[in-house]
Length: 403
Image (cartoon, rainbow, N blue to C red; front, side, top):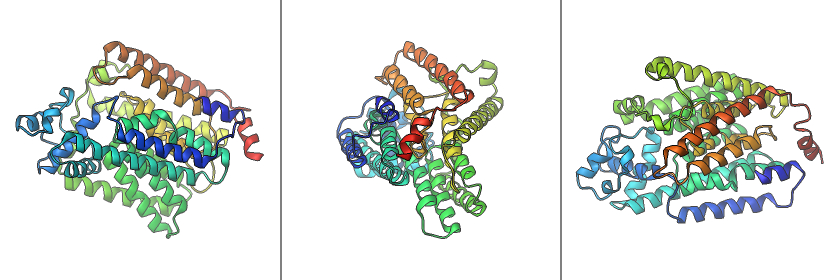
């Protein structure tokens, strides 16, 4: 956040390539350290082990693996002991490959998962550095939001969250649409396949996918080809995973302690109404953020990334479950725009949630209560940022761009 404020005031004392290499070094260091902040990577390892052994991770639970006497299953976290995996087939495939490489050792499976996540993090850093163009300040801002962002390094590589795989696929789709020398149909198909893979890693990436499609609205053939590529990728992925994959996704357990927004019981007790409410709320927030970004003039061209950013932000801030690593959904896309009024606010949000929710293992109820207050405060702040006129908000940025 301090670096973002310094950029706003005209600081440009570090070469972008230095920040890029610093991010690479940071990713390597976090890759070598033991995982911290969350038990999720242990769950990934166990689900990968189940798949590698030939069982169905969408049906078999970590407790069943433990009861079978498997050495990896002995390390299963209690909080997800009876829950089959809720991640998509692409994420499960990554987990299974790590398990094949790691064998019967939890430590080695986790190590290979961290290698995969570090590689994805660096790939994202390189792609956004190239996509923002030669402008020094734009490259520095992109690096500050992602590449040398200690929170993203910690949560994506150090803690090892699967979100980084989905983000890499999504940014890869942007890369194909922006830099590909292929024909329109081929670019759309490949980008759509990458987006479909992101959705098949974590289903919430459906919303950023819609935003990316809206960003290509001036290229209807790309949208059609992309939709086809995404549909085929998601369809084939879940077809290979089997019906239990869809059943596990739809039956994901809901813990009251995980809810960060005050959801009335009248909605929670009615799944259809609950889902419709979340969907409508996400679309409304995305529309408002997109409108504000357009008014502020932060993007243009045949590939408009503003709807991608808007839908990515909306699907995170409207979600009843919000953890700081979820912000990876929108930070790389935000880095591809010119400076926006939301930069400092979203970084501050991630920082506050990270501090409140650490250590992440054995979290106390009071930490969740504090996080709920922080989430609501940010939601109000987001509304204020959308509502307030932006004249002069980006004036300093435009001055820097013109010098």
